[in-house]
Length: 205
Image 1: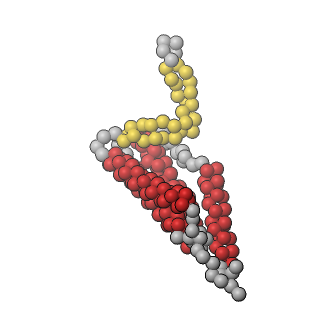
Image 2 (image 1 turned 30 degrees about the vertical axis):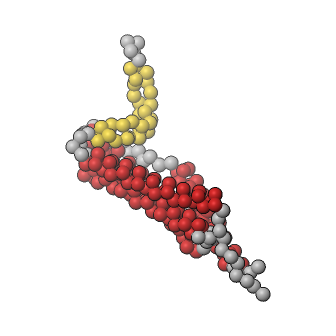
Image 3 (image 1 turned 120 degrees about the horizontal axis):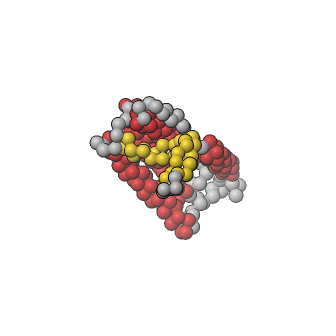
């Protein structure tokens, strides 16, 4: 004879932690939105636009006083662009928007996951979809935002040097994305397995 099991109730300490997690997600989303809006205003504003540029070890020299200079290789720098091509300007606006939407989507998915755990439902198809959506959104969204930043930087360098320097450098760290994809896939698999085990044993003693 089987009997329905009582729903899982997280301990008080875990409930406080989950609520703190939800609040932190909301704060991060609001902060990202504010930073994104400030960046868009900065890009569209009348003044010079600070743009971070990645270089592939560009040679440069640092003055050391009367003795001369010190040769160095520049990996990144910030330039102030007074003029931007249309494509780069559009990318400079799209990048913060994509970042805000990506962050908000991840925060919403994880907040719903935390709330579901507070309600006593840890493993379910809905929670598995939430984890999968958060991981895929992060990988795709931040990759697009990174591409927009690269387009902005390359356009700024090209116009600042009258196209004498085409700095085609895509700032991409594959190891980071591979690690995130692996960890996200593992977490999604754990939730899928947990959901199947819970479904198979639900209602049994």
